[in-house]
Length: 398
Ligand SMILES: Cc1cc2nc3c(=O)[nH]c(=O)nc-3n(C[C@H](O)[C@H](O)[C@H](O)COP(=O)(O)OP(=O)(O)OC[C@H]3O[C@@H](n4cnc5c(N)ncnc54)[C@H](O)[C@@H]3O)c2cc1C
Image (cartoon, rainbow, N blue to C red):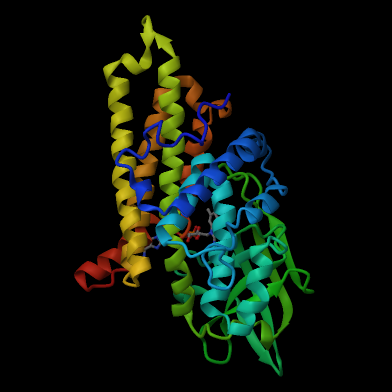
């Protein structure tokens, strides 16, 4: 049983203060198309794919045809659009399913963002349109088995220059989409200057091997992989020409971190809407549970979290559009909204009683998926330390 549909955002009053009115008519129209697509093509299949831990490959074309991969980038975008709108797209995707939002975030944010931020004009012209059309699926390989939060200094994957080539050796962990990506951006430390550099690695390159991480209990639809790189040889033309240090990697993460904050809002909206619908239908003590004061308390605290979080992510995206967004802005939004999301999915699960842990009612999926959103793209602790450094002037990472 699916408890809510996506086409009726405002009638369910999840956008309590009407932030969607900040969007242009063209942006609103694409959002309506997206909601229709998600309602008809994605929502009906997500629980089944979630339980089997499979990614529905057929939606890549549908998402590409809607223009979602192309939206952020000058070379590919179908029309001028705002960061607030692109955030809203992430919200809508996660409102349906956080794994699908993650898939899109890896494709159009982490993978294409790396090429946009770190690539030469020639590299952007060559790769972005092919990723935008869905002809190619991309992945982003930064995290390693022994380096997660400390990837700014802790990467062990090494790139050694050999004539016109680079030879990559090392391993990566948790890499989203990487069981079926056509290209993976691999971040490695150069043996030459010790700086982190990015490489566009076609996954058919000899020595590249990706193995699915099994047994995940969150974002089960996302295909995360362990990658081993054994003497993987790529030409210098596949090195991101304008990425010379971790500072450039961080620039990519800054862009995508705010989108994860938006996705966290979408995940809590999805859980809240399912809980609200359930509360209207479930009868106990002779009346719908929505008529019980303590249930209303949970729902009102939830809409409070959602409304505060939408306000925050809207402003963070406006700062990006204005060119004044800093790392700590995106970090505060990611840390704050994911914490509010964790509370909210817990309250939704509470509203459903026992049915809150059954996949059929959707809330169990939002509840479980919240955990991965909470940890990836910088844990709450890491994002807190980034904000802490900004407001005190003291770095407390080590
Ligand atoms: C579902 C999923 C998808 C992902 N997708 C990708 C991807 O596509 N590409 C990619 O490169 N990575 C990906 N990641 C990796 C993700 O970014 C890392 O999991 C994350 O950065 C945390 O690293 P870690 O798991 O190694 O935890 P660790 O860094 O080992 O941290 C463990 C705990 O210690 C805390 N901690 C660490 N250092 C400090 C400190 N100085 N002070 C206080 N606390 C500290 C952390 O906050 C955390 O609570 C994904 C992860 C998941 C779960």
